[in-house]
Image 1 (tube, rainbow, N blue to C red):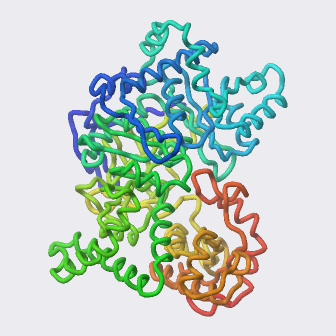
Image 2 (image 1 turned 60 degrees about the horizontal axis):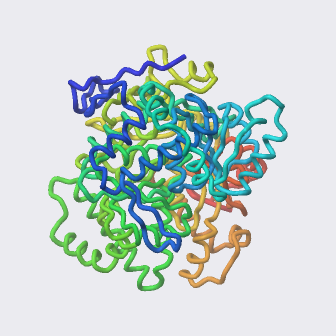
Image 3 (image 1 turned 90 degrees about the horizontal axis):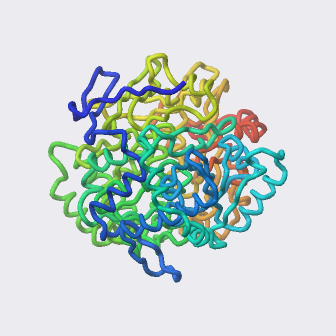
Length: 633
């Protein structure tokens, strides 16, 4: 089955409520059959050939070299010629397995220039995960980052059945000059062949197969077309000109390009008139990279913004910590006041100005000093952090989307923000709430189906062509969407109370000590939680509280740590009724990680795996008698 999304027409722009349970936004940029990624790059090079498109980090990592749109396109075509020289034909699939880097983007666009389909593989993928993706997508060539990845894929190829695509897999390694080798091999290829291939491409052709993170079962390959990527890229640029318009738009990308949000950003920057993008492959260098590239906007998952806040709080000790916390309260109060008719009072404005000099400027400086907007996606940020960052002078534009929607399908535009919501439908998108509150989606970003999986495709769509997101939501007046939980993750207690765990988990994760939270309670007498400690933040928190160093294992049973977490649980419970509150919790001695199989590569908890692995700990939770709403015995 192939989805047939119904899209608002270009003649009816603007947000339109169809009913109280459905909102849509008309297209701002009409889509057409020629909208492909090679076309988008050629258009950018035509509109602004000498303007910088990419900033490349120097070998010493202390400065950035500009690359114009024309120069990038020329390099893309040289690499594309090399892919043609290796015998790849239009429609063939190639995989890219590497950290976020310039070469990832270069090979991505080169593959499209050669008429190929790109399959991202997370650099953290296990051999089993990589084998499934490479086999299911019938990948012919894999471009990997380093020798370790190359060795893993060679091992898979050697073990595969003779005659299969995996057994015959061609492997190139970036650390072994894969890019320059491809350029050299393409010298004898007539670029008229590239012109012919791009001319045959249409917007409906397959551009990429992006495999879902797979919180349950095997990952499914979402088939995304050129129209999905380019149509939503152009419309996003038109939708948020405050972010992507102007002549000084700069972005530092540190999200994995294997994640659909990273790919959406990559293509959208190309669709913009003047946008410049740099790549940061190692988050250990993130502060330095932000300081040297000085981006105007940043895109990240909520956990990054939580860590920035928590690190600032933990590093400010004694009197400085009191000042930071007063500044945080002031920022939140100031932001909330902006949403009222009266606005901030004179006293609040004065207090805010004082803390801007003492605290907020420093925080903005950590992001490079020029960041005006940050885009948060991949999970709920929460009202507290949203108000804090806006009050500190950095507006957070929270959005919502899925792999299947080519990343965002809603976003809070700068001129119509409702903090605590994930915003309004993007142009060309319709959002509807089903009878049970499930979010249903139609629009230009919607996948055409799951790769080689008609059954899963059929299950994902309603009879009238709406995609079932699996998320539960509600609309605020005016059409702002709120996410209240996952349909399959709703907990039903023994007393019959339905509880969405996301709100409690998000609020509890806001504490500096907390890394991950798993709220449990299915068929149990009350709600409980498994908590893991943030190993990076633990030493800072202990030091700021005048406590001796502890490793995470010892800290998980330390009475002082548990008392702090008990207070954090009590604060989290303030957002829910007593029947929904966490009544018992325990601290696990180890964290949830991608490596131990408890987080997806996009850092979502694999709930079923965690519940199964810690079944004894969950049973133990309910042998205790809670000592209050957030009690811990």
